[in-house]
Length: 338
Ligand code: KG4
Ligand code: ZN
Image (cartoon, rainbow, N blue to C red; front, side, top):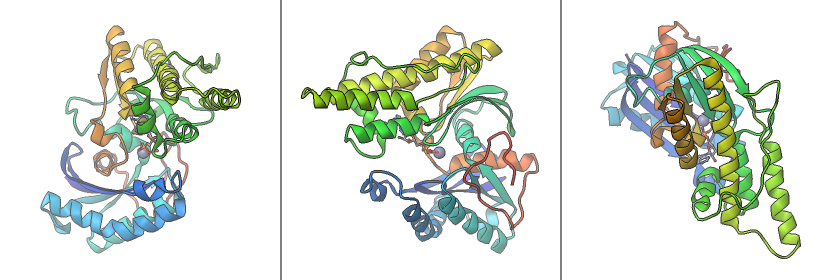
């Protein structure tokens, strides 16, 4: 089954063709980063307009790279939630029009389910059940993936998402957008234990996260040092923040694995590109005798191959939508109603 995937939930306009959920035939991504960089973050209105402008060409590119045309496809899968509502609507509207004109079924895909599916693209042996740590710009979840379309959220952030915290720390350090990559690069030159930073824990919800206190603590320490006339070395701030946030993510994830007796672990989402996080969780998984799967770096950030992959499994579960499909800015991964 060849599925055309379409992804426009944030600042990447993406289209891809994937066969049977696992074989990537093409993967086209137009990133708007250079535009949003000028504003220090994603401007939703600009993102929506750029998606509308680029989506046809990106879909054309995905089809031509796969050496296919519309009649070779079996379905269209599109990210319908969660994300920026205008951005999502651009993709959903295009997908509806495309599916209608080519007489193809339409499959709605939850963005975070797509991030998990990014692992299926390069790990043929990976199948649910497993435990996933999903860390992106908008979400930080520990999720039990019971089946390809069956999820249970065990832990979530009470405030900022991990990626959001990276982006805000990057902003305070003046190292621009997108934050995560820049903070990681700078961290390589710093001392991870230069700053003492808090680790928020919820005794009644041990797998939950809170990154807002951590972010504010970093901001306060940077400001106080500036006011005293002895600014903190930026590399030390970046390294200490990376150490703190990745330790928390790793600790809570491995605690959940231990408590549940889960031996198969999966990373997902934009922050899973972070080398410090990857190394830390790899080491901890090894010590806990768990198998760890991580998406290839090119599939960590937003892309449409992951959406086409998950679309295959949504189709297997009979989850097709009509042309009245709507987009939703927020939607629980476990519910994913449409
Ligand atoms: O999954 P994603 O591409 O988009 C959302 O669904 O949100 O994640 C984007 C987030 C951004 O906050 C970005 O700063 C973060 O992922 N990110 C990273 C790295 N690369 C991207 N965070 C830490 N280290 C990285 N190397
Ligand atoms: Zn994403």
